[in-house]
Structures are given as C-alpha cells and as structure tokens.
Length: 98
Image (tube, one colour):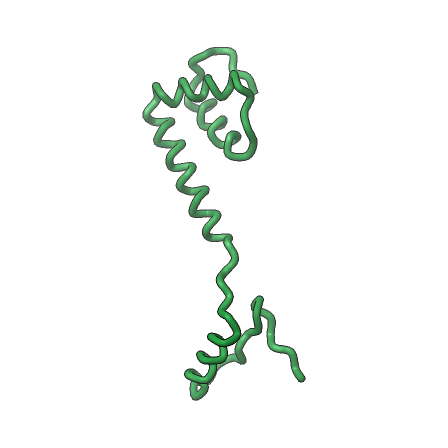
C-alpha cells in the first residue's frame, strides 16, 4: 500500500501498523510510517498497545504445560482420597482402558 503524501493521517498509520504485524511493508511505506510515528505521539501509543496486545494474545493461545508422568502419579497418590474425574493422560486425552 503506497501513500501519496509523505505525512499521511493517523487512520492510515494505524492501518499500516496492523498490516506490518502480518507482513513486511514496502520500503517507501515503511519510511513514511516511521516518519509519522516519530511525529505523532498518539500513533506511537497505538503501536505500543498493539504490540502489547499481540504479545499477550500469543501467550493466551500457547499450549498449556503438560506435567510429566511421574508428577501426575505423585499428585494422583496425594489426592487419591478426593472425589473427582479420572486423571487425564498426556495431551489431555482420557486414559486408555487396559
């Protein structure tokens, strides 16, 4: 996306901030965005917030840690007297019946 004016508006700048997160921008557009971000505190704030949201969104969808089998067994023994559903196997699948 090429912007005709070297000083484009904030709506265009925020759109480019989001597009840049998905794919590299062409060099002229990157330079225009850089110049706009140096001059506009509001768009700099938007860029920082966008990066913050993206970073924490990735953490939210990251796979959960799986306990090693030995740790699961120790917990099962410690909690053996408590009622509850049967323990899950690695990966969250129900244990296989023997």
